Length: 315
Image (cartoon, rainbow, N blue to C red; front, side, top):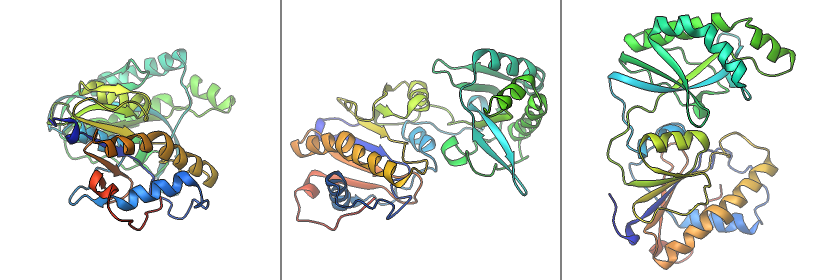
């Protein structure tokens, strides 16, 4: 656990920060110039690759670990499945009303019982699936997998086989279900299946004391690890220990204009106050990590802010 104020870190998880180099045309923007200067002064963190997907990167920092047996919980995000040439693409659906959810879950109950699984509604409105099983079948998190070709579950191991059978059963139970027919009639996405992802088990070592941002999934992960959560990425950092800040809006490819707005807000509202705290000695360092890029971790310390000018890095 980290100690004094000078040891405190703020770790920014910024999926999509480097995803579109050169996509922001307005280089004359003052917030972007400042952001580029701060990133340019930061130094690479050696050997600090990160898990793919901001959800997995956050879980890793909160002390979640994968284990091979026992009771586990998956985030079960309802998805629409669109057939491609040789695969299926899973896309998130809009809000599923309680009556729709109850009807779908009722139709799925025989499949869930056969798999030894249960579906429940989290306090944040997230669907979660629980099951006792052996083996590893974590899969990619939503930010990595949704909108892309589905990866078929390996059939190696008890949990993988049961999840594969369950996924097929759910698709059959919900195909042409009255709820889906009505949603399609209204121009809303049908619920064809579930995107399952588990962070593993909480309880591993971590210096993180607070999570800021990340929406319902960020809160779910923080609560599971017994860590304080704040909905605002610009929220106050922890008084002791590390703080992880999640800004996931850049992860979905926005328009160039929207990307500019997001980067300016990132610079002004999220990073600038923490740079000021770094200069005052209230923080030990700031880290910037893009979970969509390999070996993208950068660390900014006070001595680097006071050094001579360095070449800027433009997001």
